Image (tube, rainbow, N blue to C red):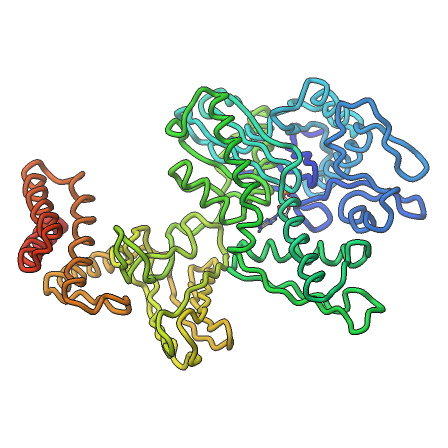
Length: 582
Ligand code: AMP
């Protein structure tokens, strides 16, 4: 038998197996997918089913199928399946055996050892039951490690200095939040908190409730008692939920939902991301409370956290990432597939035990944020060039994301689309990498929804499509090399932008009250103040003094409403910034 040790994430809903090959963690395929549903069953001919096949029969034959066995680990129970009954360890062993076999098939050699992950809150009895399951599957369990520890390892394998990592893990049915200290020799969980009955399935339930209410109100029917209809609604709602992670609207269409009804019930409902986010807000609040509890348990505060790592499929929900970023002041890391990250970490731990060299899990991500500009508020004033990120940096590629925008005027028949690469809230401080105009929009009141879809592929080609939602009218451009470096262009663009500012004709169009000279002057002054304040940190003492004097002069003129003084002081400030930046 070989020395190879496999890493296994034995999950409530899904399980995965990974190994280290050529120094890299690789999650292996089982039956054509890297995710094996943690479901076991017996077919009507008595054949054993594990994974997708068992999942397929669950709706029809729940009495012959067992799922979520992980919730029963450590209990002294017998779980009925067909005409037999089994201990939780035995059922888990069947899942582990399937993973072991898949690893052997792909590695071309027998495998006898494994590292298996468990939740941080698992008791000794639950850990022992997991160990026993491994033995029953013919695996020597060389170590049981905590799931958040594995996730931290997947991200921090190379870290030399110890780092404090918050692991936020939201799966289908469980939520855990842990504070992990990782790096150097030891990786340990300092505190953990969660709710093992909260997850993406609850989000589905909210959408299902919404659909059922719609059917009652608009179609005068109640599908709740019809199992087949509810199964279709459930599947459609999960699909819509996943779609809402990448787009601002999703449709739920199911024809002939209740057979025999005349007229037929054809469900066709659009759900907006905003409405959906309102439905799940209370759940997200609960998870953020748990973040505070975990931090308190570790006797740490938000500012002690070096890194936030996302685990579990439901963390792909953008509002979760946004709320965490708001709370913790940093962009959570999600480069490693959140469904596979724990298995990858288990494989890394396995390799360390086996004495193999390890390196970081490599994934293709975009090194830049891409987005567009829109009228919004900046420093309390309407500003037409607010940057709206669409694809955030470190997003795994290929990826496709859509955001919704609205026209500002009644009868507006065209929009100008500018595409930027960068991180600054002010789009004009980012690099413009393309632009185009969409003409021929419908003659409708302001608020006409324009969807902007950004598709970024592995070759760094960014395709931006603007679509008028009501008519489907669309226009697109393709930008090659979007992920390549733009340093020289960036410099030119910055110079040109400042030159425009110095000429005093910075373009401010489209804002409802932007038409007065005075307003233009104020917008320009505030943008320059923003920039000057940023420059303050890096300026030499002498420049700092000059900057502060001019900042104060601009502020005073703004406050006094002194138009001439404002022009003079902003011109002087623009000159100084130009000098400092070049
Ligand atoms: P896990 O238990 O980690 O496999 O997570 C499964 C949960 O993640 C299920 O509720 C899925 O519906 C949910 N999920 C998977 N992909 C997405 C996505 N792109 N956006 C939102 N939820 C997702």
